[in-house]
Amino acid sequence: MPVSQPDVVIAGGGVIGLTTACFLARNGASVLVLDRTKTGQEASWAGAGMLPPGHVLQAASPEARLRSLSHSLWPQFTAELQELSGLDNGYHVCGSLLLCRSQEAAEGMVQQWREEGCEAEVLEGAQLQRHAPELSTAWTHAVFLPQFAQVRNPRHLKALRSACEQLGVRFEEHVSTLDFEVRESRILAVRIPDHRIECSQLCLTAGAWTAGLMADLNVPIPVQPVRGQIVQLLPELQRVSCVIEDGRRYLVPRRDGLVLVGSTEERVGFQKANTVDGVQGLLEFAISLVPSLQHAAITRTWSGLRPGSPDELPLLGRVGGYSNLWVGAGHFRSGLQMSPGTALLLSQLISGRPPEISLEGLSPDRFRSQQS
Ligand SMILES: Cc1cc2nc3c(=O)[nH]c(=O)nc-3n(C[C@H](O)[C@H](O)[C@H](O)COP(=O)(O)OP(=O)(O)OC[C@H]3O[C@@H](n4cnc5c(N)ncnc54)[C@H](O)[C@@H]3O)c2cc1C
Picture 1 (cartoon, rainbow, N blue to C red):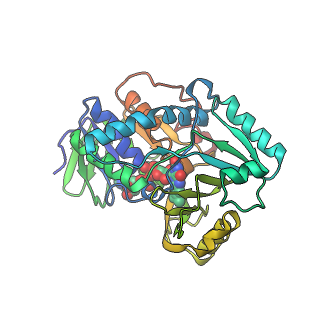
Picture 2: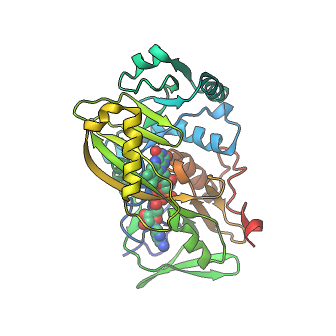
Picture 3: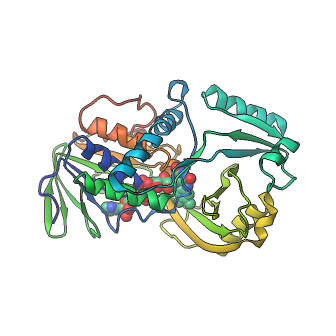
């Protein structure tokens, strides 16, 4: 039985919805989370959990501002989740090697990170091999980011869900239909099978499915699913020392010896299958970075649907034309990393407080003129 009149209804219980619920409830709001299936089973579960660093005072772009705010919140938020849930989300600082194809590329990249106030160093030749002995000797240049962290997604989602419950957040799962009652510019209530739920505020955080909900409210938004496949390996010995990235593909070693190989970027609608082509490409990529992985066991494959947006940035804030409709969606490849910052901003906005950072470049309305 859902709360009859929550302050805030959140539609979509992925990492964005659950973290927002947690931040709102922490400040005393009554919150109801609705989900089409079970919470925490979609993109947020499937992600690799990589958390790149940032520096709040030196972040200049909208992306860097949200990444930096989130970076500053992760350690404390992890501690709070552990306190509330008793669960360890696996957050730890592990460092990342960004592979480069030339010295100039490495120097350019290191400069960018340093300008943002992040620690970064160029590693070359023997120095790189000492740092990552497992790496193929074909790679001779890289940038090392020591502040780069990671989290275990499924564990983080469990901790979030449990913390929300401790804070009094209510849940309604397997909600097959969701309708909205609107008067002029105000959402009066949400209708789910057998229930009408009046709410003061409605926040849509349904990941790749958010555009469908927004369409019901006559607000077109260009959020679309982008499939990402992952292969999980178990090497005989732990052979990968830190996250290793080559452009948009990567290896993420877990502390228990597993290594994630990710990921594809495919615009194939709402299909979540793993494909021969996708898995084969990831395996070849893994071996080209760390040849000894050819002997590793393949323990699992999966995929998830990232919520993609045209500029790869989230749509975050109040939706124009409505006084009590909010959205947090379109985080594409960075939704885990950006979840604490997004939740802090949404909880501040929804409670009528000034946001921690400028929301310039993140407005949910920024694509409207292009679409109408
Ligand atoms: C392979 C892969 C690797 C990734 N790696 C990383 C990474 O290393 N670091 C990082 O920061 N990010 C990463 N990401 C991206 C990240 O996972 C996403 O940006 C993030 O999970 C989006 O969270 P979300 O809560 O918006 O969406 P989701 O987790 O998809 O949650 C949406 C929720 O809404 C629910 N829902 C859908 N329709 C409705 C409806 N009509 N009514 C109610 N509820 C509904 C769904 O059931 C789901 O629970 C990765 C993603 C993938 C797929």
